[in-house]
Amino acid sequence: MARYSDESKERVRAAVDFAEVVGARTELRRAGVNRLTGLCPFHDERTPSFGIDPVQKVFHCFGCGEGGDVFAFVMKTESLDFPSALEVLAERAGIELEREEEDPRDAQRRERQSRLYALLERTAAYYVRMLWESDEAADARAYLSDRGLEEGVLRQFRVGYAPSAWDRVLIGSQRAGFSVGELQASGLAQRNDRGQHYDRFRARLMFPLADLRGRVIGFGARALRENQQPKYLNSSEGEVYSKGRHVYAADIARAAAAKEGAVVLCEGYTDVIALHQAGVRGAVGSMGTALTDRQAGELASLAPSVVLCLDADKAGWEAMLRAEAALRAAASSHSRALDVRVAALPAGSDPADLVLTAGADAAKALIAGAIPFAKFRVERALASGDLGSPEGRERMLGEVAGVIRPLSVGLVRDDLVQLVADRLGMTSTLIAARLSEIAVARPVRPAPPRVVAGTGGAGAAFGDDDGPSAADEAARFGHSAPAALTHREQVERGFLALCLAFPDAGAVRLADESTTTLLAAPQHRRAADHLREHLTEPLAGLPSDDDAFARLMAEIVVRAAGASEAEKSELDRTILHLELEVLNERIGAAKQEGAGVLELSLERQSLLAKMRHLNR
Image (cartoon, rainbow, N blue to C red; front, side, top):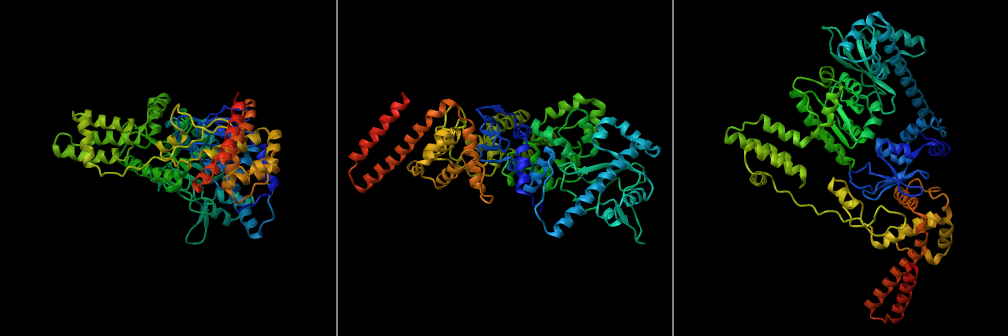
């Protein structure tokens, strides 16, 4: 694994526009001097509980508890490890990373992989030239034109043509300094029984397959001749290409999918390209295979909603069932809420056919009208079931019960029950009762505790009752809510955030050791010690092996970023709150021991008087 210098990391951190990075995932609005807020990209919610500090480049969600710095955000949203996230951000910022001294074997592997990427990139460019400039590719151009695909979008996807000669790529690549071994490792050449090497792809339409960073890792190739087998041929498994690891065009679709909150899954290459040409920029392809766990995970990382737009035949229906199961498992393993929908195509058509025959507006309307997967399954069961006999209706009810039963109580479930009732000419009450008889009873899971923390400024210590809390929203959509903070913990975090928001006054308070001893939570005392030394740069000097502490500091920074000048007076009030908490604990302990509390009560009255004075 690559190890980059700390100086390189900090140059990337300084150069990245964090608001732009996060803004590609969720719409942000101003909510303080240095704070932007929006709907959390990590769990579904109706009211914003997610905030960032675009200056310090950290984020925190008060609903689901996710938090961290700019690198953590890219790692979580794009399912990357730290070196890959750093490389992605460095590319966007145009910064060359410096490596620390590395093992010679690691350097050799990195150099070899770099050469394979270069070879694949070079070959992709060659195939594009062949498609548009060679006479041999006339039939390929005609095929694409007949599919309604225009040159502009085909060039965007770098679609090309592999000539029919046996050794064009082999010879040209060797002349450019690449070895036969590298051609084999990249999947561009193969060897026959006599030990002779030749081009793997010949007389085929070529579709480059790329990773999320846009690097070509292999090719998908379509036959153009009637007797040419197989019809579709992919690169062989190798050092950079692994079948079932990526979805087609994710690198091109990722920005639009993040912005629109939905990624559209098709089957074939031309389906994806046709939808992009029609204006559906978040379309990707499964490349004609059953969706793998890795592909499902990549889809789940692209957007919170996946629209299945697969062929309208039996194979397409079975592919939808498998895809939904894989997506559900991927969302569960990554603790993400994922909305799976279906855009039902006309019978016997695929997305490319729809764009060609009905036009771009019809394709966009179909995607926009996608329905929840559960509703699609119920409608399909009603349409295909035998409703003319008691036995047929019973079978149909058993099938839809398996769909409706797992749904939580709400509008979607009620809508499906009503749909079945209308089709059978029965009341929804009767259908609900019948489905309950068929369904296996499920244990009722207690709702997670409500998070007291609001999404307000630095000193926010009490939740409001104007709507569902962030934890309620997280629970509703199946995301694990963070552990509820006690009132005392809320006040302590508010104090630390206010110290950071107003550093001159904060430095005085933190320098007074009697003040920091008021903090009950060990992690808060540790944060106070850290801020005492790093009040102007709160994220400097954080231990690299303590994610929990890094998330706590990110939360404190985000809270501080939301503070207004009017909250400056809250600092003294918060200290009095902490003193009152300590005094109440001492009074409680004294009562348990049977000791007198008169003196402590007088002290408490004095504190309350000071608080009333501040309030005035």
